[in-house]
Length: 150
Image 1 (cartoon, rainbow, N blue to C red):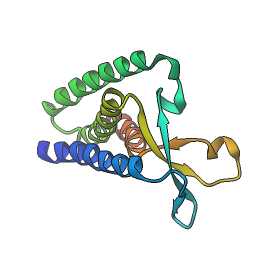
Image 2 (image 1 turned 135 degrees about the vertical axis):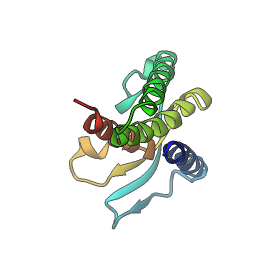
Image 3 (image 1 turned 120 degrees about the horizontal axis):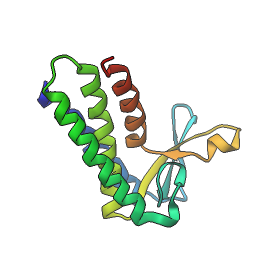
């Protein structure tokens, strides 16, 4: 089972990295969409954290990202020694795959490449741009909470 969790982490990291590299090479003036034009594909460089928070403090955001990755990795490793908790470990695997990918971006590129947004009429929702890693972080956190023993 440990191998499966490592494959999930590595798959999310490498899959999102490949998408981000493709997005970086894409001409930003040529829009594209998915799912009958409900999801727009567009390049956005996020120099902060979620929803561009902390843009003016990029080094602090990067340092916090590294520290949280270390902490979550420790929680994941400690969970491996316990019986059961498969949902917790699966959630942590999704969370770590996404966190490692975004942290890599923050350290290597100095920004996170986001590329998905909703094609909706409500402007505040339409302005949100995210990536596969963001989705995995949210899904992983939810699974980890649901899998946490009482």
